[in-house]
Amino acid sequence: MTDQPAGSRLVALCDVAEVTEDTPAQVDHDGEVYAVFAHDGAYYVTQDLCTHGPGNLSEGYVEGCEVECPFHQGKFNFITGAPTAPPCTDALRVWAVTVQDGKICIDPAQA
Ligand code: FES
Image: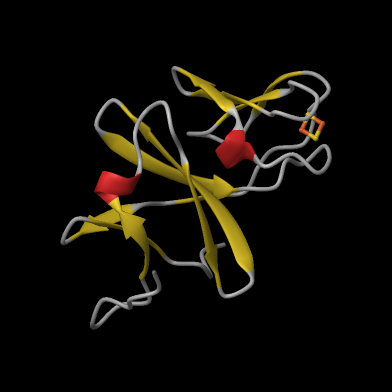
């Protein structure tokens, strides 16, 4: 989904109903692939591609606010993007999330 809420630079990535704590969503928007996570009633968006290699974090195992990469089992905190277990050492890019009309929205250009 790529709806653009009026009057903002926000882009809707998916419906909140598409993401659960156990099952992140993978969203491809405009050439960028995002992983969307749910935790404690809030939503978080990171880059989907692991900073260590070819793993897709949306396919990883989620425990609390950590996701385990399915490729070499490194881990990240998906709230901060910080690596929390080797072999991952570089942080993920993260985006601030706004929920509008039941959709998980980000500004893709956010620094
Ligand atoms: S590709 Fe993710 S831990 Fe290596």
